[in-house]
Image 1 (spheres, helix red, strand yellow):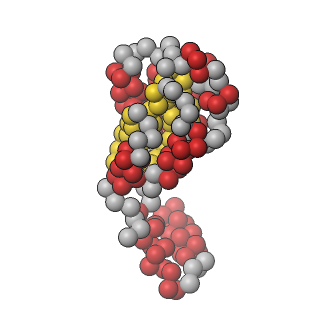
Image 2 (cartoon, helix red, strand yellow):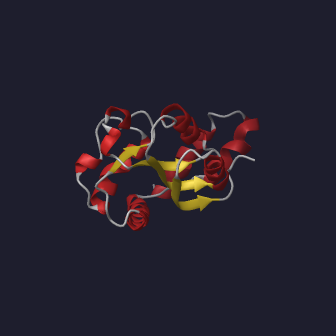
Image 3 (spheres, one colour):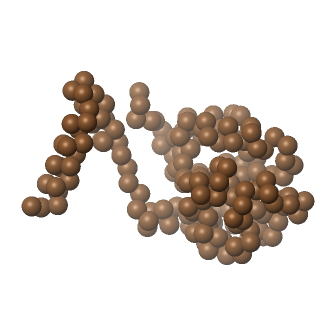
Length: 174
C-alpha cells in the first residue's frame, strides 16, 4: 500500500473520534496545520541570530539567554543550544536554571526564547509574574507569531523589544 494511502486512512480513523457535527471543525484544523522541519527552523534561528548580533553589536558578554517559561525544558528551551552555536557564545550564557536563580548584577539584558506567540497570554502572564521587579533590558524572541498576539504583547509593554521571524495574520479559529 502506498504511503499517501496509509496517511489518508490514519486521518479517516482519527476523524471517527469526533461527532459528525464536529467533522467540519476537525477538517478546518487539519487544513491549517503547518509543519516546520528542522531545516526551516535552523533558517529561522540563523536569521534571528543575525538580528540579535546586530542589536548587541556582537557583544553578548553581559547578556543572559533563557527560554520563556518557568522551566529550561519549555518550548523555547528546545532552541537554546542552536542559538548558542549560531551566536557563538559560551554555554554559560545559557543557564540550566531559571533566570531568577542567576545573579543579575552583571547582566545588562535577558533574551527570552519561545517557539511562537499565539494569543500572547503566555508571554504577558510570564512578564507580569516574573519581570516586574527586574531592572535589566528584556528581549522576547519567537520563531513565529500571530499578528494579534504579537500586538497584544507589544501593547502591554512586557518586554523592551520583541523580535519575530515570521508573522501569521490570522488564526484558524474564527
